[in-house]
Structures are given as structure tokens and as C-alpha cells.
Image (cartoon, rainbow, N blue to C red; front, top):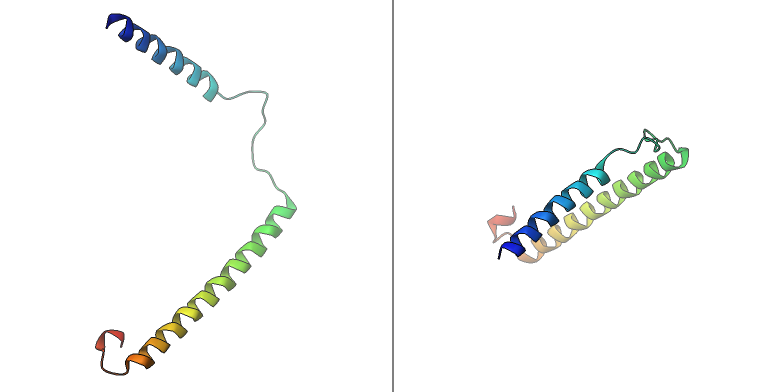
Length: 80
């Protein structure tokens, strides 16, 4: 049992030190804001497509709801 606990303790210590070393900032890597002209154009087009899909989906939901209301008639007050 003592060998097992010692092994676990050594494993945790080694894992912690390796994780600490892996998470450290590398001074040779330069990070910061990146401005790609194409990515902003792609993002704008993606937002436009998503907005059109949202409007189309909302229209489909409204049409389905009105169709259900027409089939139910005025007898069900929960749909009003």
C-alpha cells in the first residue's frame, strides 16, 4: 500500500510540474490581434446568412402555428 501511495504522489508531482511547464508562455511565440481582411468579409457574410435563416425559420414557425390554429378552430383558447 505504501508503494502505491508513493507512486501516486510521485506521479502527481511529475504531472503537475510538466503541466506547469507546458502552460508557461513561450517568449519565442508572438501572439496578439490578427487582422485578416478575408476573415472579416467571411464573418460578415456568415452573419448575413444566419440572419436570413433565422427570419426564414421564424416564418416557417408562424405558418405552422397558423395552420394548426386553422385546423383546431376557435375551440382551443391556449392558441389565442
